[in-house]
Image (tube, rainbow, N blue to C red; front, side, top):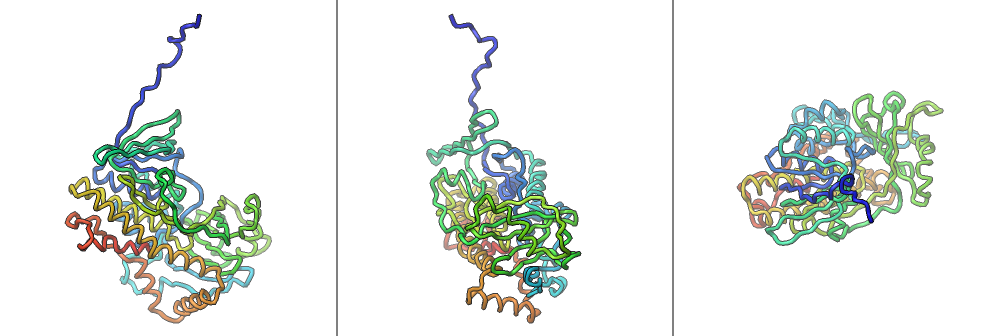
Length: 446
């Protein structure tokens, strides 16, 4: 006879479904910014994140004025200004140390007349993980914000238009079930939400170089006169060397290694790369904090909207990091989609037309601006194709000889998006002023 274990075996789990008006998958800066704007507007928002904390690996470092303007609207700017490092110098383009380290051109913020732009600096440098933690701290002050750490998205189901969206996650002790009016995917280029909906990720993966993002503690300013942001122009030893925050923060050294190098040997290239890139006395003395190799892509989702599921940030698009346009565009996505839902919930606007408009405008923004510009930025630092060389020479010549070029670039970086999604009187339909909805979204500009 089987023993009776009823007194010692736990009872069966009760299957419950947690509901929110909007669920966001992914607790990076994009998902967090969207959540903050929604919660500040009184919308019930639940954020689901697979990891147990904010991701700490080296990622974005720089936030340009066009993004700072959006962050200021939700009260984030003072904390970001305090935590980060303002780039008051500009951007230097130079040869690699191995080839003399000569300065080729420089965008000089000192050449920009005082008062001519809102932010008289080229951006704030701050590690992406710190930005995310700052946004999270603001989210946690909102009554309608919730977050579930350690909940990995595994599935979504949509039924009728009036029915809630069903979401399944794997949590710390098994499957967890959720429902929502709308689901926002902000879970990165490898988006599980996008893949679960079988949305093609169109474009290509760069096959010439694997990218390596490394954080290094080293006295770049003292040894080589490096300023906050430096682009190393070289066919092989190209790199981006920039601050990731205040004086005690490490520097970001991002570079490429050829794809014929076995993956297991990629990080073994670091000492030789640093030898050719870093200024200063030999032998080099630096502290490697972290390094992360990855593939770079130029890809966009075939659609940003399937029913009541929307893509945002890298879940909808991915591009190489040179120039910083990826997170810039993603944060503008977050501002746009949050404003759509504020209009839907707080002003009773028609949801489908507005969200269709979001999906088209933000996808077009990546295709028409972010993608070609990020390709140009990448080729500028390493390609010596005749057409690229001619364009680079023209750009450098303008920086070196035309004083108005500095104001022009500062003005572009400070461009204020006319955020029409935030204006309830516009209906978001073609044929109205809303044709230009976040027309500055072509300004996914850095």
